[in-house]
Image (cartoon, rainbow, N blue to C red; front, side, top):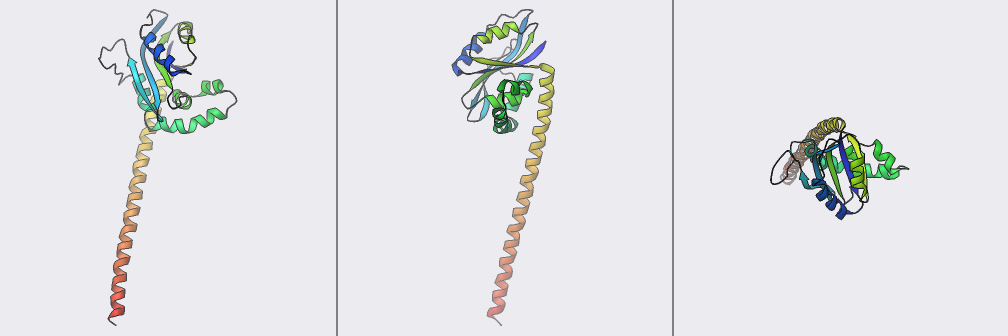
Length: 205
């Protein structure tokens, strides 16, 4: 089964240690790791700290153009910040955080749980059993959440459409406000000109 896995850590230093060890995780028929990224919430913006893809030999370990790369792009963009501002309150108001996370999308989960300074690992994996990676991350104070990879792909496509729509609406709103402000400014100018002529008319009656 192909999963996108998000591991949320209580202790940031453990996330860094886990990511280093994850790079050396033995690839076999039971568990394969195709892509992984270490992300951090810095001042409300989720940014990648490190990443690896065993099939892409690049110096900077970039994963742009991949599924995980798409996830990072959305999380670090306006939609990710919007989720972070609103979903946290929703999760906090539920009776069970774990239950809420199980029902949430990946974007909602990471944005809601990753507070400023927190670090997480997001990975694309293939698992015959969840046990090996559960045991691996179980050595740390962490919470592991999984989603079907095809579901995440659909979520990313939907998120990109929503983000594009938000951008278009924002651009239209800015243009409308600019037009309104310009019209008001021109009206004020025209009124001041009319007032000057009225003053002249009164002076030279």
